Length: 76
Image (cartoon, rainbow, N blue to C red):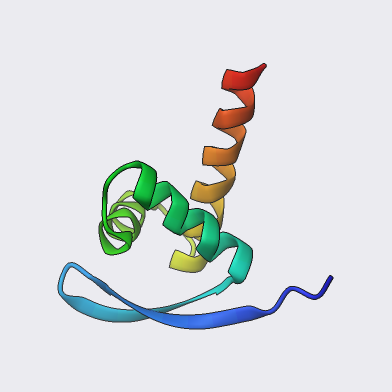
């Protein structure tokens, strides 16, 4: 399976930025936002505010990974 990184634009706190992520991460991020009844921009803005180092794309991937891990821990 080929995983392509796609660059997408998003507005965070009124500023437009671009983020490069694989489709699987975008899909999961959208699902997380929907389940939290938040916009994608709000979720990404919170990730951006909370990151300590690295770029936004990496922070989003780690956020999605942490979310998946917490689902597994609850199920176990």
